[in-house]
Image (tube, rainbow, N blue to C red; front, side, top):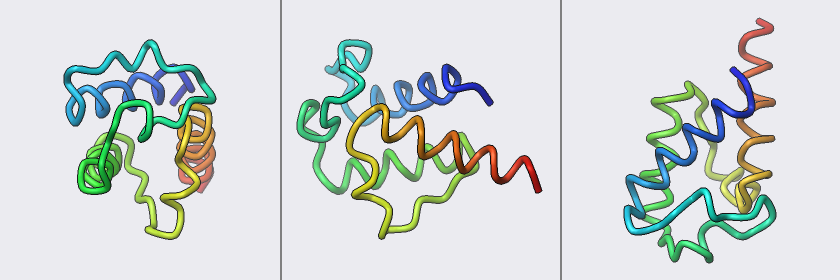
Length: 86
């Protein structure tokens, strides 16, 4: 899976939990939760949706690693690469 496909999956998930937002307007280094005013419950639902879409489970201790778009793309890209290498 390419970084562009991962980014599209993230955008799709963000649109579901924050339909009034425009994820395309996010800079790569913007704090996604703060910028889109996403609470912890919605963020959890977002991660569940990404797990279903991308097949990557995010343990609770990694939630803090997923602040920016860049963080998310890098995180999921690394884990998808690991799982496809097995």
